[in-house]
Amino acid sequence: MGNTLSLQDYLGTSLPGVVAAYLDPSGGDAITEPWIALCGVELHSDNSLTLVFSEPHALQVDQRLTVHLDDRTGVAEYDADLGVHRTSYKGLVEHVGKRRVIVTPIDYELWYSGRIVSRYRALGYEHPHDTRAEQPLPLTPLTAVPFPDVRETDNKIGVMITRAPSQPHTTVMAFLSCEDDHLFCVTYPHSFKAQLLRRDHHCQFVIDRRHRLQDLAAISTEAQLCSLLAHQVPHDHPLFAPLRDAFIAKSPWEESFFRHPQVELYHLLPQA
Image (cartoon, rainbow, N blue to C red):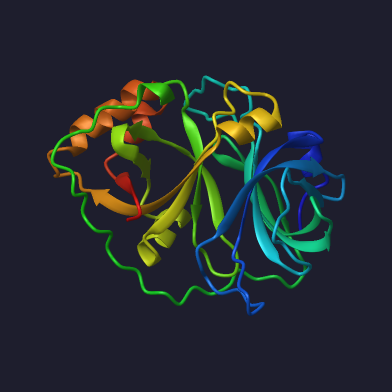
């Protein structure tokens, strides 16, 4: 199912992408530490993709993967509508070359602002049932607000990768980065990524600085991949308000979201 416009109509013919996959050596879809790479993506009118890697990859035919696509390259300022097209494209590898991979779509929803503008689901496909129990996130170990990383003041959005069955899930996230590799993000507890984090507290985060870079080689060189363990900062925690205020100072366009009484604040710490 879908509409008459292709992803190419919304996103253009090429852009950077973040690829994530479970490289299960048994050939299955076991949920493991995702393999993640930044690559060039060529979009085709039939919604298939060609992934172009700068280095050899480990993908194989029939591999399920997720390609995060969005058109924020070169965008430095946002407003409350978040006028960026973005999708967590679930696909299947159809053909493999040394540095080029052809992927066909299984399922995606393309979001713009707070609405879906295009969607596709392959005939007969159903989201895999997630049997993992939800567990509360551990509480943040912080006792003081870390100093914000001034190098990322103008970098508002990154890509979070969470662990869904069969294929990882990706989403753009406003983030606050601080010294000593502390990251913070905010979301609603009913969001899919929040549900996934309660089932597996591990995640990855890609900071690629494409807000000020246009060339894929430069974006790849600048990109930072963080492997993290999510903790919660409850509303009644003494650091919740000052961290929220630091978030708003960095991204004032999301102030109403950050102040919503239902949002949850997550502290993402590098894995030991």
